[in-house]
Amino acid sequence: MTAATDFFDMTTAPLRIGTVRLKVRDLDAVSTFYQTMLGLRPIESHGHRFTLGIGGTPLLELVGDPKLAPLDPRQAGLFHTAFLMPTRADLARWVAHVAEARVPLQGASDHIVSEALYLADPEGNGIEVYSDRPVSDWHGESGEIRMSTDPLDLQDLLQSAEGTEWSGFPEAGSVGHVHLQVGDTAEADRFYRDVLGLDIAARYPGASFYGSGGYHHQLAGNVWNSRRASTRPEGMAGLEAVEILVRDAMNITAIAVRADSAGIASTRNADGLTLRDPWGTAITLRN
Image (cartoon, rainbow, N blue to C red; front, side, top):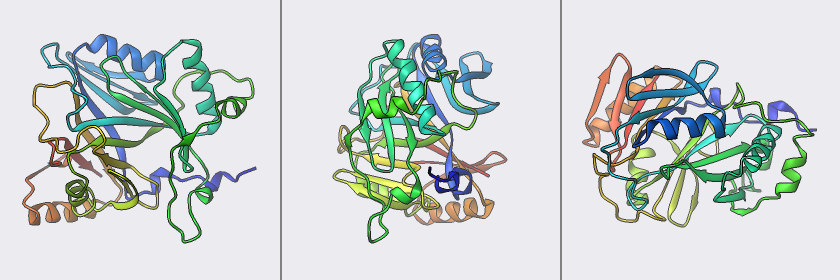
């Protein structure tokens, strides 16, 4: 049996994902989907804004506007929001839940570091639901983080539920990472590595994976659908903002200095520091 301490504790990472904000055309339909299919719970609602999460912790904010242009999958923005299940059994219970609900999945992969399944919400925003493998399984002989995209053994995964049923998003669940569509990976590296201070944990052809504190990635950027994309149109549905929780407030000051040196505008207020990546996604850093 694997010791619990061999699994990554996200709260120890210098930077980790907080809340993801999406702009949507049909607020009721999208919010209902995340509640019924992922088991997220309402936290607060203010007119055209609806916040979902678990245990009082916000994970997803939806901003409704029926006048928005539909999501263009070739624009920079969201590839997927990745919801991290605390255990493999939690993931197995969720898989059985969506299978019973006949929710179409877009893929299922064994990434060495994790086991993951993919789908989309009613407006095409990508979703990953995954559980991590023990940290000791992540590394190659030289200590590098190994990632791959191999077939997932669904039958073996389902057996780990041991006959228990899905009862909603787990209290210890979180947004483990956000994978972005970017126009250029080198430009993404200059922002997410050189300004935000994330490490490049791994690379795929056309993609960089950015980690903090030894995690395989809290953020990633790829050009698979969006190569040479420019700033995202303002009036389009899709990703609007990503909140990053910063363990040490001094890191926010250091990021502000690096942003200023790079000529990137930022706004500092009581809520933290907000800056935009090269494609217009707002990144808010909070302690």
